[in-house]
Image (cartoon, rainbow, N blue to C red; front, top):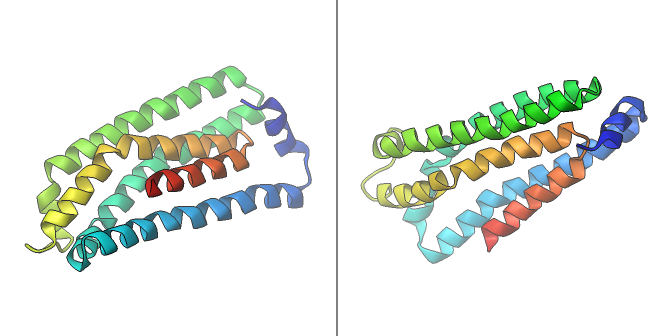
Length: 181
C-alpha cells in the first residue's frame, strides 16, 4: 500500500486530486469501451454478421457479470479507503485479501451458474437458431475468463482507493492490449 499516496488524499488540493483521479479514469473508461469495439471488428471481419448478432446477445450477461465484479471491487475499495484514511494498514491489507478472495468466489459462482444455464439465458435475450451457436461459443470463452474479469474490477478499484489512479488506468489499457493480441 502506498502510504504517501493515501496521505496525499487527505492533504492535497481538491482540484489537483480531481484532475489526477479523473483523467486516468476517463482514459481507462475510453480504453475499456474499445474492448467491445475491437471484439466486434475481429468477429465481423473473421466470421460475419450472424456472429456479431450472437455476440450482441451476450452483452447483458457480460454486463451482469461486470456488475457483480464491480460490486465487490467498489464495496471493498470503499472500506479499503476508509481504513487507509484511518492509517489502519493492517485492516487495509485484510480488506484487500477479502476483495481478491470474494471476487474469485463470486466470479467462479457466476461463471458456473451461467455456463449451466447458458442456452436458456441466451434464448431469453433473443438468440435464434442462427445466432445461438455463435453466442454460446463467445460466451463460453468469456465465462472461462470470468474470474480474471472479477479480479480486474476488484484490484483496479483497490488501486484507485489506495491512491494509485495511474496504475489502475495502466491495468485497464494492458487488458485492452491483451484482448487485441
